[in-house]
Image (cartoon, rainbow, N blue to C red; front, side, top):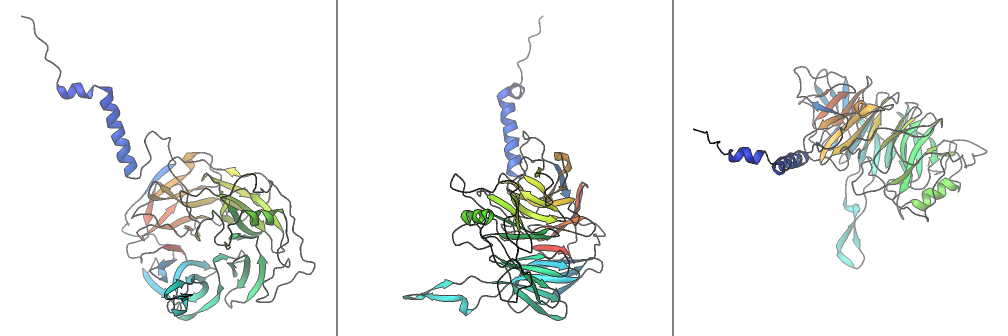
Length: 441
């Protein structure tokens, strides 16, 4: 008697259909993207690095400086003790630096009654006056020393001073006395990024494009005239060693592309104070080198993120990272572009300029990209997970330790410790105060 074959099971028949397989793949992609992971159909994006929970013995890297809450804290990773650094009453800490064992804090002055002014003809209506930010030298057990008003603070390359930038003026202030040593005029709308042996690295630019916007030619020569009588200006003189800005093509470009009414901290299409970039911005920016005698030189048609030695880390409008040389020996060397990973945040270079660290995003998840500045493939760049919530819209830049490890504050306030090339990162410990900014003390 012939055996009648059984009809295939309904589930088996469904699985065998190509449409169902495609649907299941689409669902997996949607779930992956929803959880902040790149689509599996994208090409690889660097080397993913997870951050392990705190080990039995957290890393001991000496002191670290933290911005925690509204204040600044020094934490000893060996003794696990925290010491709050004194700031004037009501001042809120924003960023912190360690410069040759001196601690410098950028703080926002408190709001007061004078910060609310009545609007004309409307006695019950008030307008808010923008709060000022001030740099302080802070030491445990001693009153803070006010260094001066500053929109941006940059450590001096000599390790004994800081540059305070406000508007188009950068002033070098010596530590620890806080005495003015030098003042340099910056191009209009310029944002100070770093001090190097070759001069001050600044970036300026605009979202404006088209035939009406002049562009600096690559390798534009110096067009400023140095002062015939160089000298240190008197405090409050508001001049530079070059005697103030001199009209030239680079200065005209910066003025033409700047946002009307914008200051040095708010150029058109600029980044925020920390250098973070929104996804909606398309930025055309220029990196310049300003020497203390006033000479200005074009470096790259890109935004400067950090500089060390003669190396400048820059970011193009399409969010591709590159490395420029201040000695002018060659064009910008563009690093591999990672799919699904957008380096939108501020950055740092190690002391030798051989390793970079930049805050990035994968969808709505924070990441830290770390790699060598001579990277030539995606496998050279590591993408460290910074979990713990939605990324801060104005994050503090990462920092490097003296041993070349990277430090970064996660959205939840925990501090990640990572060394380039390793496949896992660590937390500095659950006993650290929750921080929004970190650097080695």
